[in-house]
Each structure stands twice: as C-alpha cells, then as structure tokens.
Length: 189
Image 1 (cartoon, one colour):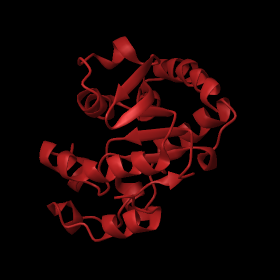
Image 2: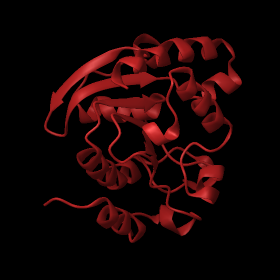
Image 3: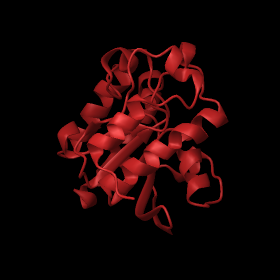
Image 4: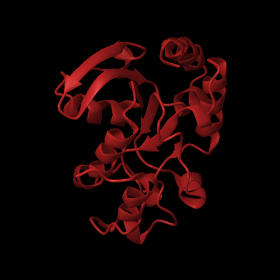
C-alpha cells in the first residue's frame, strides 16, 4: 500500500514500538527535500537533534553543511535522516531491537523519496545498510568514499559510505578525507 509523506510522519509520531519514546523530547524524522536524489542516513539523534527535532544540527551538522556547500549543495537539495528517530538515553548506541523496530520507518522513507544515492554517515549506518543490502561486512576505513551499485528488493541505486562528520571534529586528519569523498557526490546532483 502506498503511503503519503504526511501519513508516514503521523505514523512515526504515534509510534510506540520501543521505549525510546519515553525519554525523547522530539521525534527526529528528517530534514530536506522529500524527492531528493541524495539521501544521507546517520545512526540516531543526539541531544541537539532531540531538542530541535531535526537531524545533524550540532557541531557535526555544521560540518555536514560545510561539506554539502563544498559540492554546491545545501540541506534543501538533499534529505537527511537517521535509522533511529528518537534519541537513545545519554547518546548510547541504539540496541539491535530498537534499530530493527525503527528501521521500518526508514524503509518507508526510502520508498517515498526514491533517491539515486544513499549515503551512510558513519560505521553504524554503514553496518545497517550492508546487512540490509546483503553485502559482506567491511571496515569503514577500507570502503569510505566508494560507490556501490545496489539492486535488491528494498533499493535499486547507488550506495556510498562516508565517515560520520563528527570524526573530523575529533580527528582533523579525517577532514581532508571527508572533503575528497564528498567530491564524488557531484555526479549525483
């Protein structure tokens, strides 16, 4: 059954599938163009995201904005979301069952947006998509910046792994790698 974006948002806001809803301030559904060619997916909202109800609005979000600008894009040109839509307490890693329950929403977002390229931001998102696409697990250091052609029941298109923008905040050596990897996005604009 086809579902509209508004119906999906209502469904997400009514979600009671796990206990993360009990500690969240806002559902962090996503931000950007719901018909974007490029979809960025992180793991879960952090404190600032939970407060504002938008993904990647803290320090790593400001760097993500810089990375987008470096290839002539802005948030309005792409769609940014997370696997998990509620902040885990104390920014802990989401539990496997939380990812499993919440990922149904991400799959519906994929179905509606129909991006040409999915970009995983960080190791957790990468591992989720490798599992979803039936790909052999890899280390992020071995596959960041590579584009994979995907043809499976849930997605047909391109998939790219990037370091999480927060990595560059804590390790300045990664900034140049992220800028180089981001340059590959120009072919999908």
